[in-house]
Length: 318
Image (cartoon, rainbow, N blue to C red; front, side, top):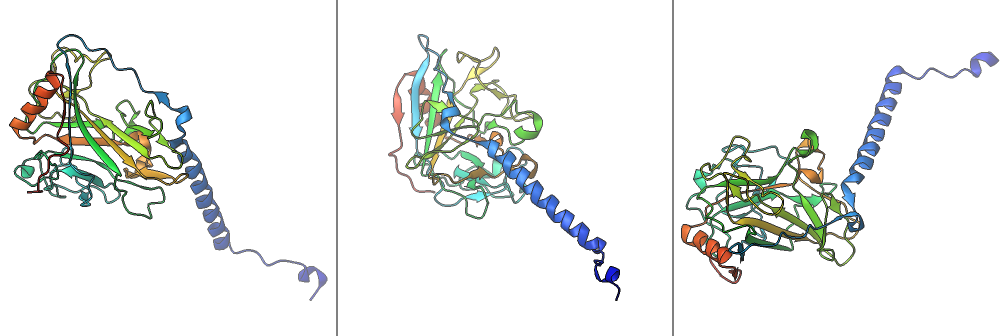
């Protein structure tokens, strides 16, 4: 063998080169995605202050009504969305947590929930649901909230009317990342910073909990129970709290959850694949099946300026 041939290296097969390039592309892509996803997180030092509530006028609905529907300790979860896609399941990577009505299944419709059992202690048979929260690597189970508070609030510009039976309402936008974010309404905080909120995932310090807040729209058009975009029939109040002309103030639902997330742990909600688990895509829905006498009690508490608390009411899930 000549010196020239001894020093010559055998050519690397083309298939091996392609494989190495593909591996590098995948690794680089994963690193870029991870870096981009870091923008989904923030500390509360960067969060905005919670806006000051508008002052109430004379005769306004200044009361509140609080009740208990549990924290989904039963693990009632599935991929259905009975408001947007009734009667069929959704994609496997987008799971909802439910409290209230226990009849929601993958094939459920709104009408099929009538008469079903409930987790609410006061007999409210409505359903309330939102995407589950998991650790960011999706290796663990859905996280059960450490606490979950249900509160109806009034309106600072006048009295409220009863929410109609079978009304659907939603907050937030599951497609906010790809459709511009105009309807994003996801709010997050930490238990030690109640005066601040953010639309990103907050990195809370040790010993504090992550707070997740849904503030539902509360100005109803007076006729429809739903609308093609599931938004037009129930809209948000204007700045100052007043409802737009042609709409009527109904009880305003606030759901507040807290989660125990170890300091430094990344977490995220279940989302559609193209939304990349962006916190801006957080959302929630309700279907009102609260019995009329109970809804009337809610309205009376709000309009009479009374802080009613039915969280101690106990009821079986039948």
